[in-house]
Length: 350
Image 1 (cartoon, helix red, strand yellow):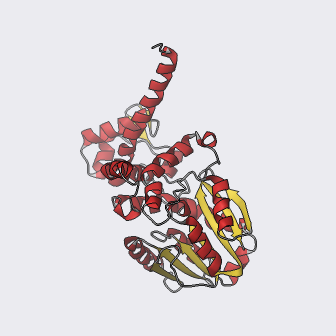
Image 2 (tube, rainbow, N blue to C red):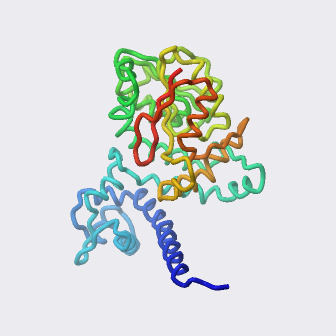
Image 3 (spheres, rainbow, N blue to C red):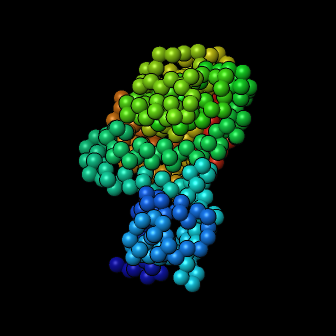
């Protein structure tokens, strides 16, 4: 066998980079759990001993943690002190920041925790329901997606839809299908007090968590959360129906879209938010695409295969497949309204 040594070296370099990144995700989880990033959020230089004292942690282990952070470029090191730059503080320490990514490693960790289940699914019929995952996936998913929703939903996604914000301001009836812990529903209810909101999710534990968060947020007067599948909720007459990062996980996305068609008002709108993806593998061979494909192998696609129909769109479905879903469901209008580096935002109407 003839080996291209240069090509082999390049591949090994990529693999070592990936391996060190995977290990660093555990380091980020530790820093988030112990509050180390938050203690460094003022971006002032601090010694390992000072950080250990503030955190109530072992100073030798804090030193090793800081050295890993410095080697990764996450913190700066200078003459015995460490500093979390303002930009990294936004990513790791400020939960209200639109680029807060500290929960992301916990989503990745769930893939390791559920490895045996994923292997069993791959050797079997491919099915593994959302509720069969480690509970850390549920809370981390909410914390990971919420900053992006908070930054974009009211400011840019809804204004990109035809006439929707005016309806919401005047008072509209809204469904959030696949609402999870209710982050998107609560953001909507806080922004539009004249409207009423109905969150639906098939996962009972998520519905219970959503109700608790709505109570804490003071919006219970205009939100109800119910356990229901995307084809089973009984309310109708909606002016707006939302699917946030969930349609591709469903076994029967056409059935879900058709139920939305049937429960919309005649001039109602569907807001569909899906992971950013092109229509071909070649379009998705990039850092965002490989992250979504890997997560979809263990989470999104097995969940779809665990349900009836099992369309298994996957997290990189792309616009063409999503358009086909809504066309099959009866919609005559489907357009890309806007996008972010991580999401595609679509508008569908009857």
